[in-house]
Length: 201
Length: 211
Image (cartoon, rainbow over all chains, first blue to last red):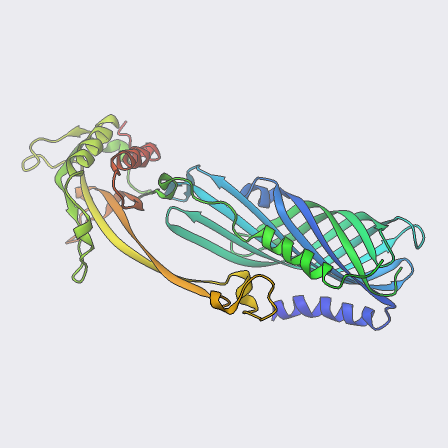
């Protein structure tokens, strides 16, 4: 039931905004992410395997609302001894987090149409966090749904009549969830392209 | 500027392929070795002094298992001598007359081999769409477009080192005070991996020290 609500809220907001929208943009981006807090404890290294897909509806000359999907892969290799209560485990651990945020994304753009437009925005919605540890010949995995928020700043630059380039910096924070009660957070830098499905802004 | 309808899916697809769910790979067989130790937190190991190490490695067998054919006795002496030296390094003294003087701790060693079989199905990218006559690179003779499946079998070996405190015996039950489980791929040339794993089991169990 909770999972349905996590998806229903973003969908309802998108549909309500889309009804009034003048045009749409598709966006695709590549990025790097730096894990923070509990996420960094699990997988410490910076991730270079990140992508995003956005569908944005232009609801006013300075505002878009849409849905933002992401796929961020964090991985780490560690050979430390892990201890849980009276159990100690030694072995090379291949640790992975596949983080899949599904966010309703609202952005406000500064500047005017036709020029470079800085923007601020925020996304809210579920993050599916797939954790996995391969140790020895064994695999331990867990899928946890978190609810999170992702504020961002960026700039959109026109590259042609229907194509724009953009860069943004986005901070993801997802509240503690799952049996382990871990939060999920990271900071991402992304660069991408957006295509107008109709019209423009 | 003409809009390229395929630019978006092409770029998104390239990023999906690059991102990959589980990057990284095993580069040596040692990376698949695992040492797990578990101890009874109610046991005061510092109060223990003498020990007995049973003189053989028991090859654990199941009624319908033939996998222990994979185990030989070539490493048994090495395993027992390595364990003995680690026990004595912790301060334990071997009881040479256990029939008349009950030892504080008894060490039991067992080994098990198992053949594991895993099945997989792999969908190469072209398998998502199948073969089409206008596919630019290849003809129907290649027979691709279908998921590729198969199986892989491998042998794993596990060495168990059990430490029991005979004073805790209750009926036919002998509670384990400490156990080490050493697991890895069973291959030729495992000697160093076995001794390294035995050393690791004791290194990560400093509470076993007698005083």
